[in-house]
Length: 285
Image (cartoon, rainbow, N blue to C red; front, side, top):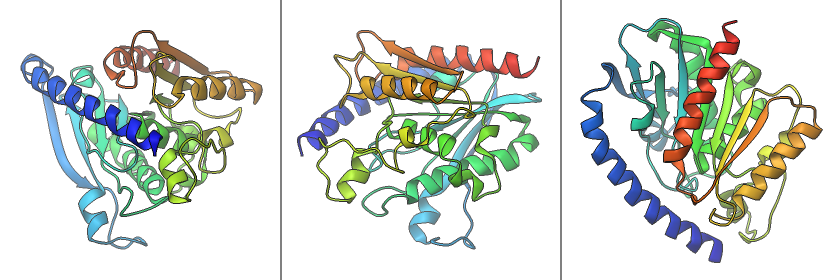
């Protein structure tokens, strides 16, 4: 329970930060590159197993496409919220950068349990792979990112290949995984579903760490300061970096943002942009 209360406190702080960021972003957007926005696009169909009214409500995504792009990189951004709260939102810091930005919603606890939210994340990314070229994107330049629970989802679908394989997509086609302060052990909400205390760490098939492998996409891990982060998040990510290297992976990087806690998205976005630029340049050689 202490872990859940601590997370709730961080969520209140982070929600206030998001309100401020979205308000200030209204002025910035006036001078940004012109965008074509599409909202509430369904990425699951009623023909799929488990589709119901809640799926119809939540399994939608938003897209911002800069005008006149051809072969642009795409960033899929999953919102945070502990797998139990939050909504899709395209970060202002990613607009006007010549990239296509996709922000999906997904179903959440307690209305659903693991692995439904992972299945939704995979379905959203599969939709992007199958449709991005018609929007001016390059299917070989799809990056998957997100904050907190969103970072966990990004890592899970990128490292455990079964989720995208269900949609006939090879996870290794992802150009890069860039989780912000995501769990690398089994998520605390998944543990709660099983009656496991939040302070009890678990690494099993629902943990990104369980799926370390040499041939994974480039992995850029970003966390806040180890002394300020939530729930030992820096140490989890440091262990992930070490074990990816032990597994033979050559492209794992860890950034620790000194002086920032769990709500570390603002200083992390420039890192994401630099990494997308770097990886895209390497892909195009």
